[in-house]
Length: 219
Image (tube, rainbow, N blue to C red):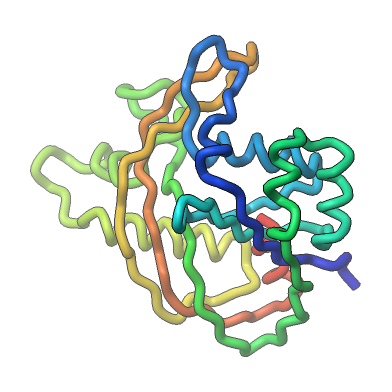
């Protein structure tokens, strides 16, 4: 049997998270990466990933998946976390074990993705990660591009799910697209900026393999 998988829920003051500075020689970072750094500082290798966050009443609420329950995570935070973070986290960290899901079970889902593909176009360096819609346009002659952005992103999500396995998409739609500015460290530890599109999907899926489904959640 696979090791347990937990869904965790926590709250932290959004101001406290946003004020967390990255050691990046003055470079800014996107909210998701800053939150990832905060969670790693609190929980180490057990920090939830993937995770989803939203801001409600000046509080940042986080839902995510991890191999540790709330008590273990809180013990790690008390040992390694910064006092201000730990104080705010006390009483605001919860977990539940993700149950075994049988094939045929249908579940609703919501996911935010950055739909990129590798490209070898002359316009980009070889192996660059490019927005899937832009990459599709590059493959078509000027003025001959029948597919819209939603169709391209839906196809990207379908293929990503098929590669992982474990579920079958029943119905899903694109809720929205927004431009985001990402900052990631390169091999020298310097932050590099990347402007990307984030697609937000919501829909229904059917589990086809319970273990593969849990692997999908872990990713």
